[in-house]
Image (tube, rainbow, N blue to C red; front, side, top):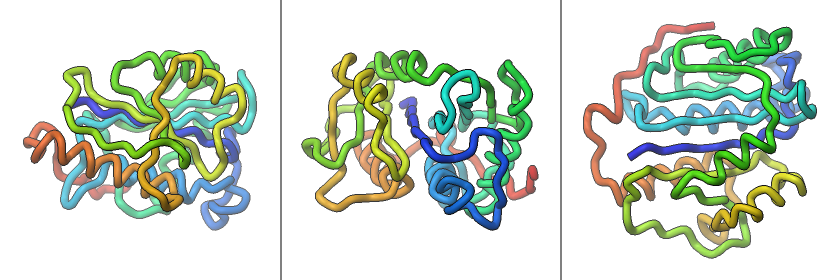
Length: 216
């Protein structure tokens, strides 16, 4: 079952001009973006190969906004720790900062300029997409979808009004993961757990050993 996750990052400098020693401050909460990225793919002794994560860095409007797209198939150099994951994303942003085209910054990771709202609209039209909010009804999936599942969630800030308008226009179901406010990385953990439950134990094609070599 294909799993798609879209994470809206509103504060991370799209140029990658921040220190790895200040991810929560000057990095615009890149610490949480890095944790969410690691959580999206890593499992015990392996990576989820059935998962795709797109991060929209929208601290600046187009043409400066950036998209990082990671695919479990072919993904390398992703480790469970926050700092190396933040470095992987930062390096991709830095490499993309002077380019006006997509580039594969490392295996399984593509970065490039993006017009966020049309992309969000395209993502929202995909079957099985949900929108995680704190005030929606509980998300209790019961039937696996043949075309896969997808989720839109935001960083520590709520979606901007124009982002909310796009999601509402496409009538993306608003759902919550429970009564307690969770971080983005925790939401992804819960999502995977619920998707795992309805899908059953993943086969070898859905996971592969972690490559612990540093790609930074």
